[in-house]
Amino acid sequence: MTRAELLLQVLIFSLGFFYALVYYVRVTEPVDLQAVSDQLFAYLTSMLTAAFAIGIINLTRIHWGNVKGRRPAWKYSLVLLVCMYGMAVASMIASPFAVDPQNVVIPASLVSLVDPIWEFLYYKVLVSVNATIFSLLAFFIASAAYRAFKARSLESSILLVAGLLVVIGQAPIADLIWPGFSSIRDWIMAYPNTAGQRGIIIGAALGILAFSVRRMIRYPWGR
Amino acid sequence: MMSRLIKGSEPRIIYLLLGLVITVPVLSHAVLPVPVTKTTRDVYDFIERLPADSLVVLSFDYSTSTVPELHPQAIVVTQHLFTRPLKVLFLAQWTDGPALTDAVLDSIDKGDKRYGVDYATLGYIPNTATLIGMTTDIRQFFPVDTMATPTDTLSVIKQYPAAKETSLVLTFAAGEPGLSAYLQYWQARLNIPVAVGSTAISAPGFMPFYNSGQIVGILISMRAAAEYETLINQIGISGATPAMMAQSMSHILIVIMVVFGNVAYLARRRQSKEAAK
Image 1: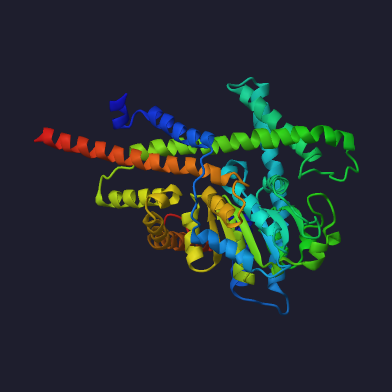
Image 2: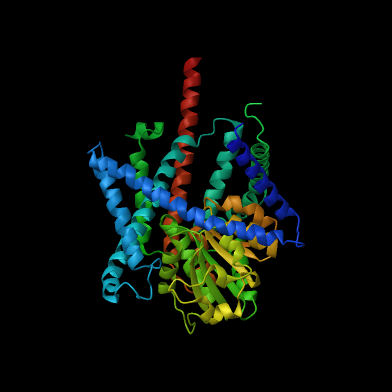
């Protein structure tokens, strides 16, 4: 292990141990460790902002390279760059994310010109396109359910029946057909589902804990 | 075509049928009575029981893709809060949140509520640090609101300088960051009641927290918005109730298709067994 790796390892271990300690033990004297933890968390803001900037620089380098070199599908790269910078500039001038909402630097006339453009791009284009793509899932789910949801074994049959009862129970019309559908759906959600979800949550938490401890003490992989 | 449908290799018929059962009810404006589920009623009752002047935080933790499911919930809950003598702060853990907050505020009847006095939009929370920090001092982490007004000039912030005094936080959560941050840092540390508006697909994952009492209620998908419209007696305000007939018909179609697919599958299996004999 080089000196740099050792330093990094000590840092990872110290921070991991510190956050675990602060979460479970309240220490207020001589130093309020909770306040220190909150302050350290606050430094994350600047780190994340830097990560955003790196992401934008990276995207620009890759896609500008595609456009410049007329690589395959370079037109899509051009669309991406125009959309990204166009929306960013419009958002910075007029939107809830505007950099100068009081119009101290940017003239009000420019804001009133860009504002309807931003509103159109956001509410009429972005919202509609994203919502449409998400809603198309209904068609794929219907098709996939028809093809894959088969009673091939006892387990899959139980899953099939439970799934169908929840799907029916979630439709308001089910209560008009038979009020019992809602009760069955509520029971499935409250008991078998909760039991399964708790198992998944606790299992995942233990997995994360084990991974974190291994990372902190640099336990060799593969053992 | 029919044999390919039975074998499951012809999805176009399913797409066509699903398209029809969605479009026809939407165009016919048929309205179904929507029974109110317990998870939705719990959210409504909790808000109804809040004392006057209590602080409620609404967190818009979804993006434009989940607008069809979560935006109607945000509209009806905000409308409900604005009919009660409560103070409301709007936050967002997702970058789209502030714009969607504005869209909600533009689509409701604000009555006599005044910006800065009864409600304020604080905007985007970049990370958990802000979420934790604002529980002790909102002004330090949000020096200005989304309109660049200094937050220390807003009377709602003067009244509630720290978010630890929140009586309810409701997150409209499409994923992460969403509910878990509020559960870990607001509910577990400060005992602030939390409710969640979720997509249908996320709701099963939230049920353990609801059953353990860590969440006061769950609004599940667009149906919860329709139920909430019934509770606040403003049918159609979010567009959810008119959509319920289409949702019901599509669910029934999926159930019929799955049953049909299984009958065909079992018949084919029997045929091949008999042929093997």
